[in-house]
Length: 175
View (cartoon, rainbow, N blue to C red):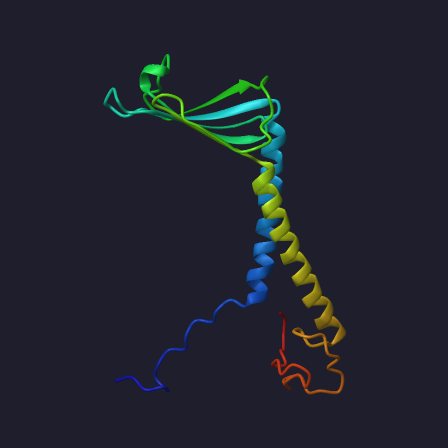
């Protein structure tokens, strides 16, 4: 039976601060990608066609970004002039209406789901903004020598001492 002295130390967990910094940058990149997809979809329509299965009853599936929306369409093979035999990417010129609200349409034997790109963009932008705000507030408090939890001025306290206001542990190093 291994003893405490012979056990390998557990791998250090990434700190919340590091996870928050990574998440805020990932959120920013995803917001830029969604915004760019929205702009591209106003002029062009990238369509990803997924091959129909071997049976004549297998549907054809299409995922497209068009008119400021992400669109999923499932059609019966008989409704498609030339169903693809393998996945394909097709580009078309966009000349339709813009999608401003989500919709689900069920034509005979098919399905069409539309989600406007502004919806995930706004959600991601709000969450990313909160992460940026929290990260900047934490960095400002650390530079000013304040408690990271309540903002109490820690001047005169030892680096590892608990905050007398809220009891939070005194952190040493980066948040």
